[in-house]
Amino acid sequence: MANVRVERTEDGGFRATNARGAEVRIGGGEEEGVFTPVELLLAAVGGCNIVTVEPLTAKRGQRLIRLAMTVESEKIEPNLLGPVTVTYDVEVPSEQADEVFRAVADRVHAKYCTVSRSLQEGTEVRLEIP
Image 1 (cartoon, rainbow, N blue to C red):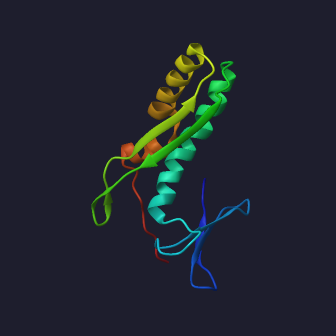
Image 2: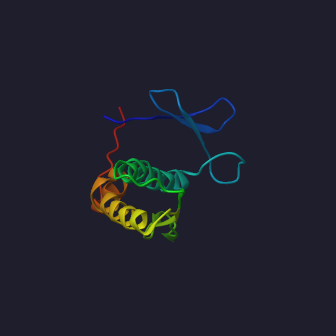
């Protein structure tokens, strides 16, 4: 089971912490050095894709020179995002590496990225108030 703890900090901000001690500061968008919740969602989509694409591409003998991406979405209602777009920024050493990368990226998007698949399938979010 995956989980994070999200809590208000002493300075009135918020942070998410995982079981391994990593922290991310969260805010409403006006503060410096924080992510908004929507930005964290987009980062999760990008992170899930890129950390899966990299090793699968390398496993097929292709090391990409540059591997980055931009993940974006617009709000279509005050509390609802429209489609999320993942745009890769890659530099490949050869045509063969490009073919491998494209095949892997497509497969990761369609089958292996838990975050993207969960969004696409409409995973239920439950609220528990003890």
